[in-house]
Length: 71
Image 1: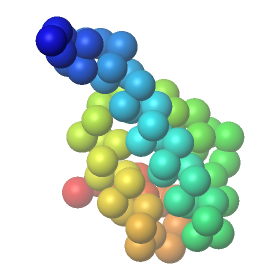
Image 2: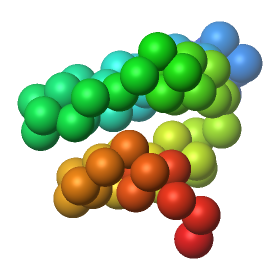
Image 3: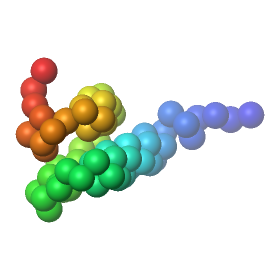
Image 4: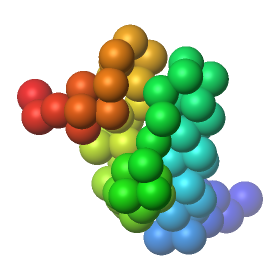
C-alpha cells in the first residue's frame, strides 16, 4: 500500500488547515474574540509546530496576545 500521500505537501496543508480551524473554534468556544487579522495569521500559518503551540496556548489563554506570545 502506498502511504506517500500522508507525507505529501497536500496532506501537510490539510493538517495545517485542520489545526487552524481547531484553534479558531476553541477560541470562539472560550469566548475569545479573534480579529480578522488574527484569523488571517492563524489560517495563513503553515508551520505545524507553530500551530501546535498556538493550539496549546488557546486552551488556557485569557487573550489573543497570550495565544501569540513568544516562548
